[in-house]
Length: 288
Image (cartoon, rainbow, N blue to C red; front, side, top):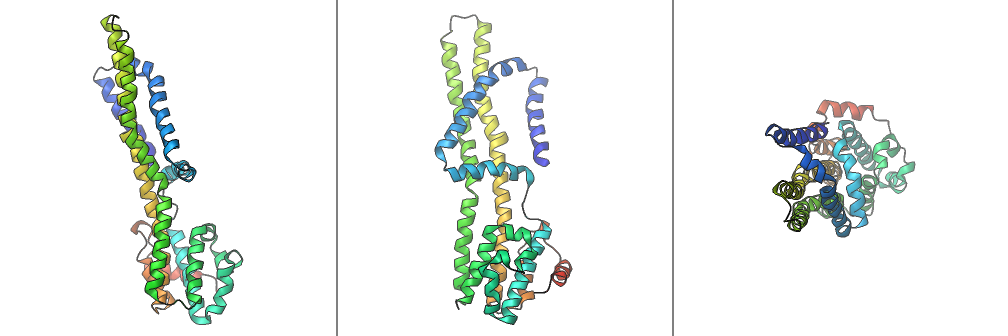
C-alpha cells in the first residue's frame, strides 16, 4: 500500500512542480516514447546480459514481494516455534530413534503436517531436518553445528539477494544510459543546426528528456524497488535464523521450552509474539 502511495506522490510532486513552474508537458510527451524505449529498453537489455537465469527469475518474482511485503507474519513465527518445540521435546524425551521418521519423511510426519506453511518452505524443512540429522549421527558439538548452520544461512541469504542486487545494478546503470540517449538527441539536433531556434529548442529539450528519465527512473523507482526487496529478503531471513537459535540452544542442553524462548527473542519486534501468546500456542499444539 505505502509503495503505491509513494509512486503516486513521486509522479505528482515531480511533474506537479514542473507544471506549476510553467513547464509544458508537450515537449516531454512528444519525446517520451522514443527516450523511454532507448533508456528502459537498453536498461532491460543490460539486465539480461549481466545476470543469470536464476537472478532474472528472482528479480521478476521479487516485484510481487515488493508490493506484498514480508512473507512471514506473527502466526507463522508462532507455528515455527511450536514445530521446533515438538521436535526438540520428542528428541529429548523419546530419543533420536523416535525423531528419525519425522526428519526422513517430513511430508508424512504427524508433527510437520500440523504446520502446512512451514512444510511448504523447502529450505526451512531441509534446514531443520538436515541439522537434526547431524544430531542423530552423534555430532553434538554445538559450535560445530552452529558453524555448519551459519554457512547454510549465508549461502541461502546470498542467493536470495540476487534479485535485489540485479535491480540495484540496473538502477546504477540508468543515469549513464540516459546520458547516452541524450547525446544521441544532441547529435540529431546538430544535424538540423540550420533549423530556426524554436525547432532547435524543442529538439534540445527532447534530448534532455533522456537525461531526466535516466535519473528519474534510477533514483525514483528502480533504486527504491531494489532497496525494498533487499529489506524484505533480510527481514524474511530472520525466520531461518530462529531455527538456528532454537536448535543450538537445544544442543546446549536446554529444555525445549527454554530453547523456544531463546528463539522467540530473535523474532523481529513487529511480528514477535509475547511470552503468554507463545505459552498458549505451545499448549494448544497437538500432542505428538
